[in-house]
Structure formats: C-alpha cells, structure tokens
Image 1 (cartoon, rainbow, N blue to C red):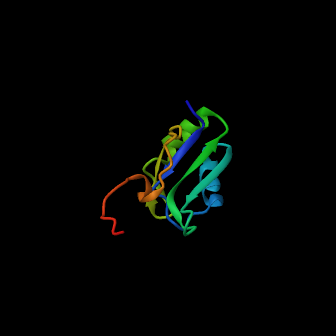
Image 2 (image 1 turned 90 degrees about the vertical axis):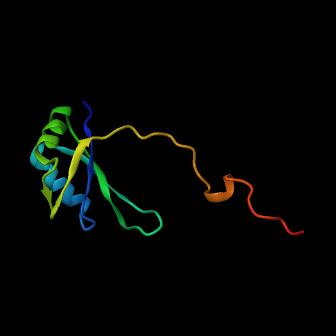
Image 3 (image 1 turned 60 degrees about the horizontal axis):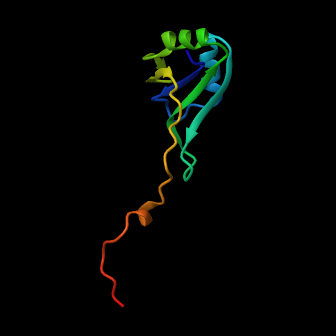
Length: 102
C-alpha cells in the first residue's frame, strides 16, 4: 500500500491548506499538491495528498472517497506512478500535408 493519494473532482477554489486540513482528520499529512495549468495557472481540479503511513492513506480513502468536500463529491484512491511519455511538440512531429508552393 502506498502513502500517496490521488484526489479528483476538487473544486477550483480549493487550496493546498484546505486539502491538508481536511485530510488531517485521517492522520498526518506529509505533503499536498494541487495541479495547475502551466499556461493559465488555473487549478485543474485534481491533486495529490501524501499521508505518513499506508494505514492512514487507507483510512483517508475509506473516509473521503465519494464524500463531499467544499460542495463536490471527491474521488480518493492510491496514486498510480507517473508514466514517462515522450514529449509532444504539437504538429511538428506529424509530418507532411499541404502543398509547397516554391
């Protein structure tokens, strides 16, 4: 069991302090992270909470998954490891297309 939790369907107004306060009811929160859009800085509606032990993480899942948080039913489950994906550079890698007029 992992200590890091994925938290989805968060309200855009939520802060990392809000998450820490809420999840502290299940145990010791060691870190929180809200994911934001790089271009706009706006929250994307999900984040991560790390609990101090796997038991506390499991307790948090049981307490909060599907429950109301600031007016929204949040999703809480074990965070999956991030997959390394090749970086996309927009349409530059897709090749061909249109006619060259030289």
